[in-house]
Image (cartoon, rainbow, N blue to C red; front, side, top):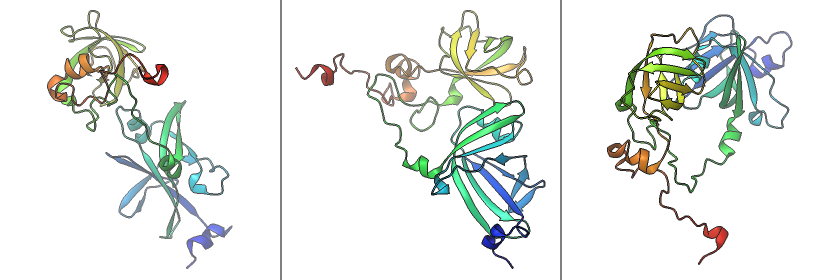
Length: 275
């Protein structure tokens, strides 16, 4: 029986198939370059018309970046466009048809998925690049560095801040809703709008007197129409007094959970010197 390396080098006998496993903290999606569903290690890999560019020239292929294309209707693309989301990691490995020996070719992190026409382009960076990159450093600033409802740094419970509303008008990135008149202007800025299938958009502006919410991008006409119910979640501008204390007081222990420096001095000693 030929080995994996022998089949790789053969111009006749080799019949390679590639498996793509995308996974994050919550779920995973498995695709193959085959035209039929294949089961490997009790997991199914479905055909999805996925293709990849050759990895860039490098002394170490593990450090090379990767670009894939896949139909925009793929479940991975739909899930990635939901918010919030955790990072997807790809493990790419190869097997030759009829054989059981596999070799991992590449592993890395999804940087972006952009759609154009009927296809989506997936841009990835290698795991070695990701691991060598310095993590985000805390800034010395008055605004909270936590992400609202992330369940990691921010203790605010998303379920406690869900507000039902009904869409009465749609104009691109602006939707008009009823049911939120009791709240102040700007109350939902920094929050999200969620539709029935779980898809979400961030709210960049809210005017309660008119019921207009401005979103980061519009929902498709197939997924959101006038008369549909939506759920709007309270927003946060990451301010210590107005948000962490004033809006979410008890949940943040009256601002103790705020990852910020709200009482910094107005003078910068690194610029003006110590006096």
